[in-house]
Length: 299
Image (cartoon, rainbow, N blue to C red; front, side, top):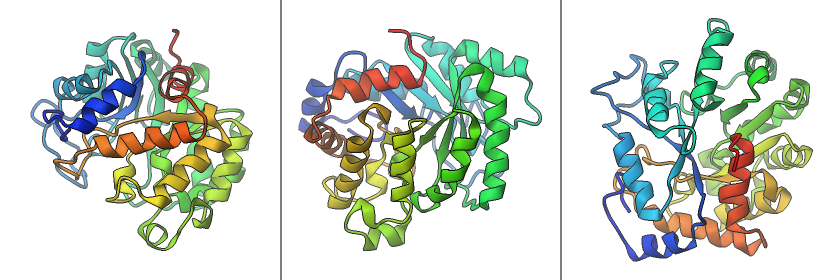
């Protein structure tokens, strides 16, 4: 299974047999630079990864439903993401957008909500942002206030080592739902030195937030944590997260695996499934039921 979903493998076939009906891939990016130019400040220049290619990729797995997440290369211009969402429709699509709460009207948010937007993304890691706790509090509060009338989530791409800042922030957001991308994606020093999840700074904070109930984690993009699909550290992260709150975990492929062109992702996904089931949790719980709750899907 390659980055455009045009390759096949024995692992892909095995994976497809395990995926429950109604599964949601909760993290995919659609990019079409020819039709929708990238932001001038984009930190990388991806090639086109269209909705047709996304559907072809998911088709190999038997998945029909996806959450399109606004990529950093488009900044606050959601045109490409929303175009994909319109074409998917509410039965098969949701989106997480990006915007400036100071300049985006409630009417605009309502329009996006009607299309299927159910979250806003704060992408700190991709742009190397390291705000202070006070700065992050102010930013998250402004977004939480903007999306609260719609019940949206605040989705953070933030290093696990920074999650400690959220311990005081999240309880102050009046129940706003928080999503942490990609296991919390620890920094390289932690990935190289830690043997278990509990040795990574910030994991104890993530565990506490999960137990409190308004924080969710995407178990996704494990290939970004290690080149080994069966990495013992990634296994520890996955199993500890699932064990802590199996009802606060969602699954994603992270297609199109940006900056990992040609990745055979099926073996990584297989391992994630193995680890979920090793904790006595069903794939239907994580891939279907949790996703439906988080993204406001009426089954």
